[in-house]
Image 1 (cartoon, rainbow, N blue to C red):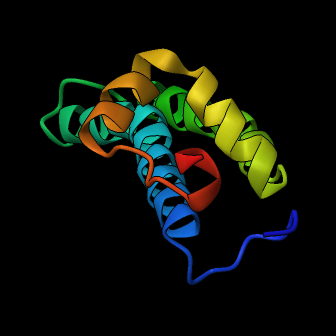
Image 2 (cartoon, one colour):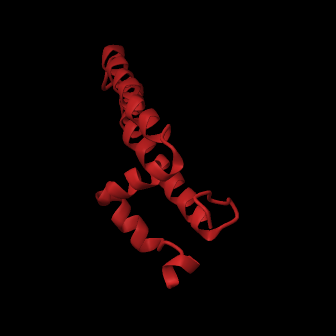
Image 3 (cartoon, rainbow, N blue to C red):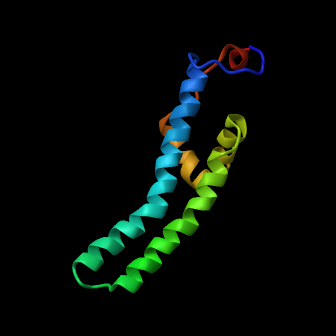
Length: 104
């Protein structure tokens, strides 16, 4: 296989599952604290200033996510794998498929 990945390969599908799971993980990191803040605001535990601060943290947290996910696919996969705290358990649960080149 040349350097081009085909969408119908097990390797491509595995990479896409990795990317999708990491994308979800990163968005939860940014948005879950806002969801908690909204619930606390609705319960009267926070005022609108505190809620605005939580929203500002979301805005600032979006930039690194945008930066990561704007990378080319090959680099993105490597960057995700570099986050070993997240990727090691995910990869253990979802092993990379064996390709003919890997079996030699």
